[in-house]
Each structure stands twice: as C-alpha cells, then as structure tokens.
Length: 55
Image (cartoon, rainbow, N blue to C red; front, side):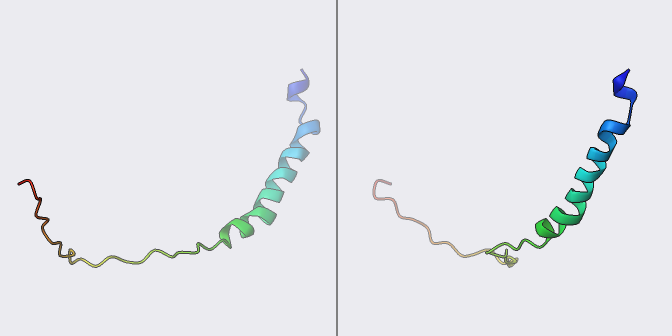
C-alpha cells in the first residue's frame, strides 16, 4: 500500500512544520495591537436619569 510508505510525504510534513515554527511564529508573536486595552475601574460611572416627555 503506497500510503504506508513514509518517504514521499514525511519530508514535506517536516519542512512545513519547520517553516511554521521558525519563520511564522516570531512574526505572529511580534504583532502588536494599535489600541492596547485599558483596565476598568471598579467604580461604576454615574448616569443621569432621562426625563421622557410622554411619561
């Protein structure tokens, strides 16, 4: 059965994983977001009640 012969496709698998781990991983991890998230305070903001004209 040709599927059990590892020679044709194992090298392609190893090369693709090496490219992924060596080349792409530092590029992905080096990405920075333009808007860094800020921490929210524990205090809730004060809201003003709205006076509806029909109530």
